[in-house]
Length: 67
Image (tube, rainbow, N blue to C red; front, side, top):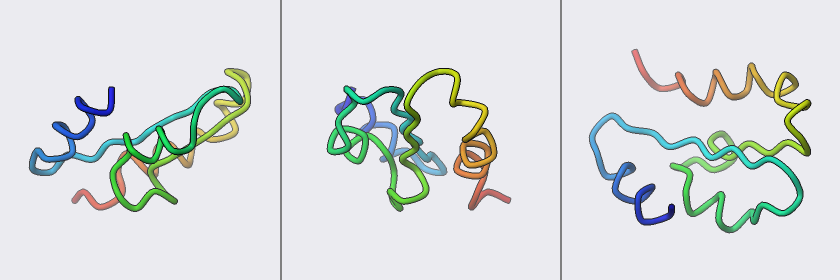
């Protein structure tokens, strides 16, 4: 996964947002997958039911910086 994320991040106009669901997901791994800045492109939730709580954050991370 990290190798593929590195390849994707090297492409022009490509941003990788990492979404971790549950407590078993490693912060280190999410940060390795996500594009910079990590504070905007790494999103964590405790369970699938919590995805609605971060929908705006996920949308903003996906579209910020593009015009």
